Image (cartoon, rainbow, N blue to C red; front, side, top):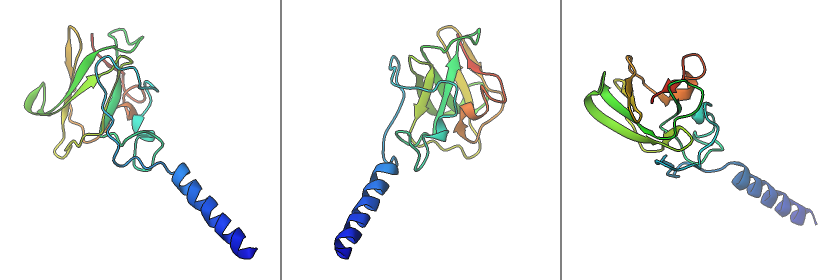
Length: 151
């Protein structure tokens, strides 16, 4: 009887570990134009999309882009990451903005040395004047700094 209870306890613990700790290490998750499967606009995506987190995949870069009035999310566009300011240097990553205004990727991005983001909307392209060393865009934007925007 004691052995049976021990086996059941071990099985219960094992099941909880498998069910409770989602293994998202090898999940590919990349935003695409027109897709509406994303969520939590304006929040720091890496709160969940990190190693051991509840989100599907480990994001290397992610954020939310708004319209020029900053009253609604932008429903299309592209985020570019360059090695130089104002879309100069080498293009290191291109990430589509989805229908909900979010962009995200699990693809590897080398931020060493810093990268300069540019956001292309339908009619404008905006450049960040300082380099970034992390892709957690919403950790600052829409939090301690102004929202990302384009038109």
